[in-house]
Structure formats: structure tokens, C-alpha cells
Length: 298
Image (cartoon, rainbow, N blue to C red; front, side, top):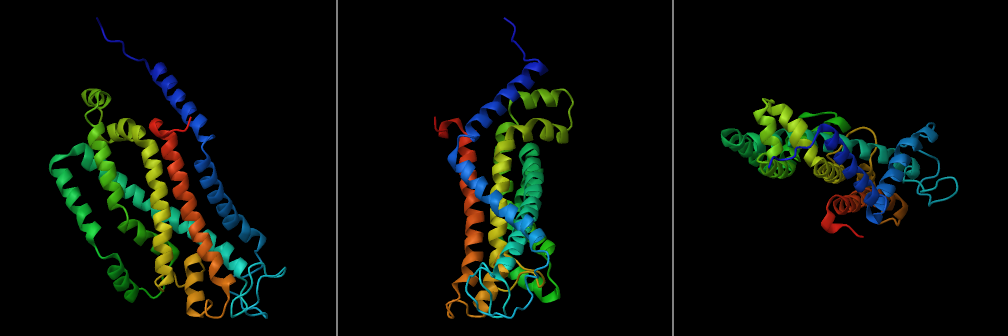
């Protein structure tokens, strides 16, 4: 009896069926909808808000310092009269940019290292694994302090680049483990026998079968980059220009907002960081339930 092989048309139909099934469960998953909904609203506020507040400089000194929230200043003002709502809106934009750039750089490096090590194995795997372990144990904060001593002006892209270059090892290890299990599958063996290159096999055979896993990994890297950037901003190692939610917290702490009872200065940025990262992690749990049939709620 001969084995029945699927035609390309059948493969396309099967793939479309899987996508329809995932979409069916996605629109019914409360965690996914709530998580992405909150993240999208904050994203919209961060990137559409500055268009409305174009004439309001977030760092401009005002004439009403230490004012509580009011109709004129929705989130109150700082000790220098700066509008907290304006700073919050611009800070959201910077926070999303750092998360996207840092998470994106880390994801690209993790995929390059993880796919190559997992598929090639042998000496290549040992070398890349050793490199991953070295980066994993590097004291990130100490390195940043050294770099900070030589950089007069720190920017958001530079911060995102540093975060991306130091936060990829755990993701690379996870991708490597997944690739190890996929490289022995029949469809990979057939692609190898057909003469496909290593790059083509990884891009056309292995990566598509890990697309859901890679997407969830990027969300975790995105949220992790925001937390790292906010922490660096809070201890004074963030960008020297512009505004972010972490810098707002750092300024509020530096000028004793909590001691002065100015809750409207430190509460919005703290709540914003918590909402973004929390929403992303809740959405990630929802995605796991959508892509994993064992976790789906019927």
C-alpha cells in the first residue's frame, strides 16, 4: 500500500484551516482581548496624543507649580509647573519605542543564534552555546555604568540597542531547544534531501512551525525591555534628553514628590508601566491558550 502524500493545495487548505481555528478561539479569549485592548489604547494615546498636544512642551516650565489634577491640568503639575499629563503621553510613546526596538533587536539575535545552533548542532552548537552563556553571565548594570562614563549624551535608540544586545540569551536557548525537536521531523528531512539550503530550511520549514511560539517570545521580550528601560531610567542611567515613564518616576523621586504628597506625579507613570507590561503578559497567557489546544476554554 502506497502512502498518500498531500498536495500543495491540500497544504494551503490545511494551513488556512489552522488559521481559522486560531482566529475562532482568539476572538473568544477574554485574556487576549483585554490584554491587547489595554495595550492598544495606551499605544494609541502615546502616538495620537502628541498630535493633539503639539503645542504643549512636556518639559516646559509653567506658572502653577505643584497643582493637583484639574480641568486645566488633567494630571496636575510638577514642582516646576510642568504638565504631568503631557509628560505621561510623550512618555508612553518613548516607552513603546524602547520596548519595540529593544525587544526586536533581542528577538532577531535570539532567532539567529537559536535556529543556527539548534539546526546545525555539533561544534557550531557548542560555540554558540558558549557565546550565549558568556552573554548570560555578563553583569549588565556594571557594563552600563562603564559605558555611561564614556557617553556624554545618551539616547533612546542607544538604550534600546544595549537592552537588545544583552536580553536575548534566554530566548535563544528556548528557540534552540524547539529547533532540536523539529529538525528530526520528516518534512525537514525531505527538504534536506531535496537539496534546500540551511537558510531555506530554517526560514521555510522550521520557523513557520514555530510562528506562534516566536510571537509570544517577542511579547515577553517587548515587556522585558520596557521593564529594563524603566529601571535604568529610575536610577539615572536613562536617556539624557526627552521624557519617558521611567524618567518621570526618577524626577518624581528626585524632587520628593511622595514626601510632598504629590501623588499625581509618580502614580500615572507607575500605573502606565504596570498597565503596559501587565496587559502584554495577560495577552501572552491568552495567546498560549489559543495556540495550545489543551489549554483552550470550550
